[in-house]
Image (cartoon, rainbow, N blue to C red; front, side, top):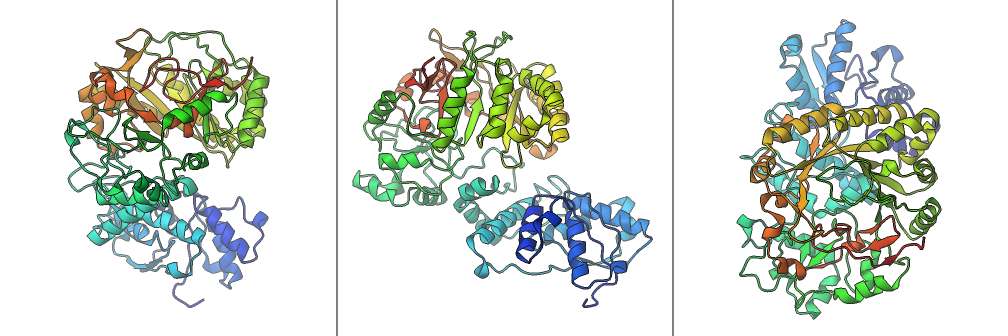
Length: 608
């Protein structure tokens, strides 16, 4: 009503910020039921009409777009359809997204088909400037999450000319880069837990964008064995331990001089007293039960400690293991349990981590009883995987019916059989699947694509989740052997992307080890180097290699004594329950010596 513009065009579908918009309008007196299901464009139109804007001054709405590029392209299409060619456009977006909206508009109008829009005067008009001093914690984290995301996207190698090519080049000031990195490190775990967002380091100027080195704590490699922790790493460790630093000091440990190594690589010879390694593979909040063992954590993104010297480790592992062994069902639970409901799989893949197949199954009544107990004691998630194929579990429909009524999140690995069963269940009981993977229970289904039919199953799962609105991420896994060529890896990535997967995870192939009944990883240096230097801007799919360091050198090239000295508290982030009801302290031990430990059960989760 200030006369700044003659006509208003509103573009906005239903996206990740729609719920926040609804929450704010509810605070202003709007009724939620009148807003839910509507696009942002429809909501804003109602708001403008209430503020006194004449309806004839509002051009046709664009309610379809889900991203900024679609917003702008659809807006231009509507203007052309209405034969409305203004001399000046006042562009207004969420203030934190305003910069990207402007540079996206400028990129699009450089394209030949939009030549007539090149001479338009564009005015960037942010409707308001967020004031941090007036925000509560919830509002601050919301705005911080968007701000970090936007700085990252504006980088030339992300959305810019050297990346996705969505925007014109934007040069990010060094001061902004420094602030971005400090905030990213400090709030990494908080933002991941709250918004399920992982903020990556900005790409370096002389390297292609890569998602692999996103965790703030340094991992040692063969070429970096003498590297000491950077100051930012020490800061995050101090923040993680909080008051627990006093515990370290009483044990004579100087956090400023800690040297950390990866237990999957050989220790540098000059390091005699390795102290602490924070596992970067586990990005969950710390379980409360660590407090029971005198180590105080708070707000850290990793909850797994690997303490790598029997003489100098901080927490004595033996009493913990003895306590676990005394329990029939543990009274201290991790946030996730890895459950093997069956040991049966009809396939006989030579590369399988679990070649011994049996008909053992976890009885369904015992499953439900056990999961009830787990949920009552703070459990969050169940991961179906292990010795058998979850789709072969004879009580699968009843198990899914249980998860439909439970607060537990269900995630799993499958060779594709599980997807076939889901399709059958969806024909008669689609509501079960919609409740298992409801909007508040986001999960991942990982599909092995070692056979061509795997891509077909991924495509079917993608179609099913779209049809039923399932809150699922789809991940594909692909085993890399000693003879796997880089072009085969690229073919796996492209075919997974075309099939509808969200994440691809190449990982090293398991082979028979040097000891009877033991497994190892094959090394493939060319595959390792290809993945380390891969220009991910060529793909839209997320690429997350697993155990990348073990492609670099064979697993058994490391002296076995290095592994014998490792004390691992991985059980506090995930435990394993197999089809016989046995539970183990280590998710990588299983039935064979994969990882650092031979499998051994700590006790029985149930009695058959």
